[in-house]
Length: 501
Image (cartoon, rainbow, N blue to C red):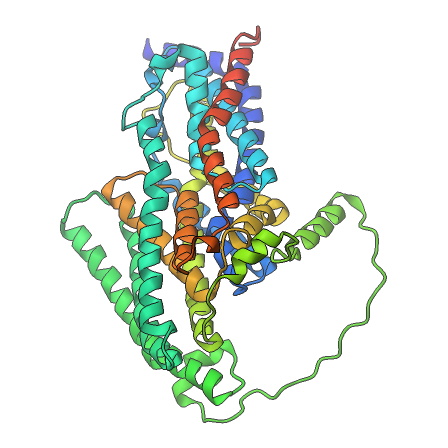
């Protein structure tokens, strides 16, 4: 009897293959929007501080985001249990759940791309949740939504928890660094002693995220082993920096040796001398620009154009006055923090890829399981091919449209330097990891924005912040839920009354 019922359900659901197909398309569009808007969270401070060029940041991020999405993105299971919709309402009509997830992706991607167009950094997690709220209300009314702190209220609270918590942590890190290192006459020597500690702390946070992210808050044998592993990794990184990286930096900047990055691994065995002679390279002759041909040729030309955008160029006198109010520190000391900044940004990008890819591929995975099984499963796992597709679309979004948010976060809120950028990124990472372990809601977008504003205020003047840009950012956060929800709800209302369903 059960087998016959399952065959009937599969037969009925197979007629909605077209719905599964267009959901795949919109999942790619949503992943594209995530890449265009959210990836800048990790590398905007590095680009703003001129530690990396926009092109370098995008190339590195395309690798770290894809790695995080593909290697750890599948750990996002039980997607439906984390929804703000009461899934049991769809129990007797699973095809309606497929439609709901499709409409949620339409609403989420539409708002994310609109916000990117305006240069507003928004939370893509909140966009998909707002879209789910919209389809739930359109389908079953307000009673279909979980409004308590385990649902919508939790999301709203993160508008305030995320920026305040990250801002507090980032400002403490920067003020400590400024007091103990940056403002001293011998800031370079103080920085050399502090850098191994910072590297060790960063390694501890990053290792904790990877190894402890899915553990319950219990101290069993497995948890103790993982915690011990994190501590060992942190100590190993600290010792490596003390005996390898510090001598490398001292000889490169103080002695003036022409060292390459790979010499850091053999620095104790290298004689004190000019290791690499300066080589003059003849500048290539300018070639007449060729008109790109074909779709891939035009795409390549567009990517080349956007990756070479100079985000620091501004004709806004107000923004320029904001940048001029900041205090500058010793360039050699700042250089040391640029290495830390890149390392922190890479891990933050890896973590973002593993977390936020589920915003797009989670709804698609739900549709896939309903379509392939003919019923609503209790748990949703994300197939590898879905992760790969979402990761690739996210990289394309970053490479072709990501410069918009880099301009906003990296060049329009406050002055950025490597020490400031490192403090912002470490504060954001520490906040995300800590709050996740405590079960508190956070958004990486809100965290990095709050950290950027807080560190900017550490200059001691309110004029060191572009409050106009910050106001637009905060305004866009409030718009995210209703904008994505209204779009998704309207699409669901119209489609659910179509004779096709």
